[in-house]
Image (cartoon, rainbow, N blue to C red):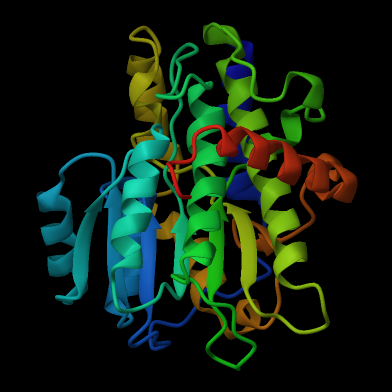
Length: 326
């Protein structure tokens, strides 16, 4: 309980105390004819990002866990764009991720902007379809699998040509700073935690994600030029449905606080749109944004040796679940 109160009060404090150092992307900046994949786009931050990208002329692929045709209709209506499509994926099941990638591979276009936003925060430990801790699977392993397939299938194609550099944006969290270094001796092992430790494992899953984003950037851009712009960020406290699994006794307090003190998804989308659309973030790679400031992530996330080890360890885990021929 104390950990939750500390996290909520810290997130509110960040929102009201931090002075932005980055300017929001002007509304007239366009991304016409670019294909944008957004996971977790049926509600909250993901939906707000989908609306903004569609409004700027992007073709938006909304990848969501269940059938949410109403969310797609909302995005079309709010953006004034008909170039919005719904795709189904459950990031807690690698078979579903592979199915999404197969569908994207058959598309004649390519993905120019990928926003990996989908998130989960269970009340207590839960297993994914393949038996991993749910947040470890959804926030990290599934994104690792998805990005690997998109490159292997040619759905994302590196390019050093100005204006054509694809972008990958991972929605992480400042909670990654609360996690201890990754324990590679127990990497991938399921931990049966309770309510009081859930926030810690949330932060740990985001540490995996930010560390992976840094390593991915290094591997995709080994030379002086940028072939793929890879960024991660924390949007700050967002009034979304991430806390839908909060204990019943907390909801009467937590939900009003979120409505009053957390940013709306539309406002919280600003750093995501900056990473996706700003000219600056298309010319370089490896940035970490917190709200509308750029800063270094935690030292654990910046550790290159840990990044290389994470790459190899996660590849070994995913190889166990690869379909025949993959």
